[in-house]
Structure formats: structure tokens, C-alpha cells
Image (tube, rainbow, N blue to C red; front, side, top):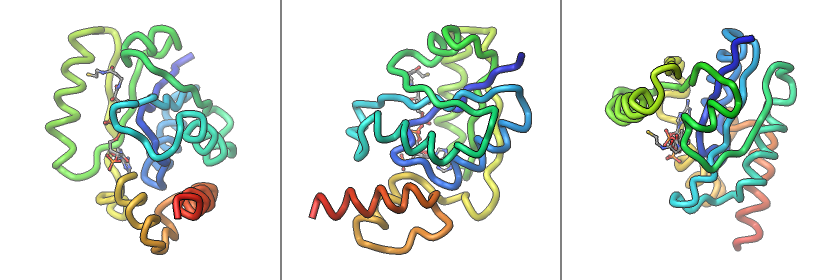
Length: 161
Ligand code: COA
């Protein structure tokens, strides 16, 4: 069985992430969406909330499961028995950072392969921080995030207010 990880902070999951996960699920037998604790990023949503939102957004994909992690990605991949990491590549600005992470992960584990999927044009400039900013100013998130995330962001910013 070929198992891939699609790692990220998912604060929150966007339509761009969902596009990568959906396409990854067509390439391998099982995708483990790996939700990083990323405490240093001081996320808006707790780890449990982020995992729950990713689960809801991917519930229609039978070969996708969701797991939290707070570890080196290479160690988590070994624990999950995954042989490939699949990530989205948006604009050229992602390249340098992704290149660095891929090189380091390769240094740590030569058996873990990293593969990139190009984002389609409509998601090229989409990011979780843009989504959080639009939500904080009560703008429309139509098409940018799954419906469960629209609801969660609304609740989050109503409770903050
Ligand atoms: N569509 C939309 N947005 C995307 C996207 C896509 N396809 N791919 C990435 N993004 C955005 C995210 O929304 C996020 O936006 P923001 O910063 O504006 O909020 C941004 O890109 C960064 O994404 P994030 O999910 O935080 O991922 P990352 O590329 O920084 O990496 C991990 C996160 C978890 C994969 C990485 O930190 C990791 O591997 N951590 C484990 C510890 C470890 O092994 N460290 C050594 C690595 S060499």
C-alpha cells in the first residue's frame, strides 16, 4: 500500500489545501493529512479544532484520514509507515522555502520522497493568513474555504468580538 502524508498547519484548511489533498488521494492508496501542532505560529484554531475541521472537509474522500502530530515530519512519516510527502506549490515565492524543507527532510531520511502538486490559478495566492484576515473583517469567503470553515471562522470572530 502506498501511503502519503500531506502535512501543514491548516489554520484553517482552505480550498487550496483541499485541492492538493483531493489530487493526492487520486495518486496513492491512502493519504494521511498531517496536522502540525505548530505552537510557534500561535494558531487561531486549537489543534483539536483544526483536526476536526480537516476531518469534516475531507469526509467525502474515502482514502483520506487525519492525524495530529508534534514531531519531526520524518519521524512522523516513519510512524505512519508513509513513503511520500505531497505538498502544494503555489507561486514561485513558495519555492525557496519548500526547497529548504525538502532538502533538510531528505538529509534526515533519504527514503522519504517529497512530491509537489502545482496549485491551479484560482488558489495561487490563497493562504490561511489571508483567509483569517478576510474573516476578521467579515468579508466573503465564498470559494476560498470549505463551508464548515466559514461557520467556524464566523463563530471564532463573533466570540472574539
Ligand atoms: N493552498 C493554500 N494555502 C497553502 C497551500 C495550498 N496548497 N500550501 C501552503 N499554504 C499556506 C498555508 O495556508 C500557510 O499560510 P499562512 O502562513 O499564510 O497561514 C502557509 O502556506 C504555510 O503553511 P503551513 O501549513 O504552516 O506549512 P509549512 O509549509 O510552513 O510547513 C509543516 C508546515 C508542518 C509541514 C512543517 O513545519 C513541518 O514539517 N513541521 C514538523 C517539524 C519538522 O519536521 N521540521 C523540520 C522540517 S525541515
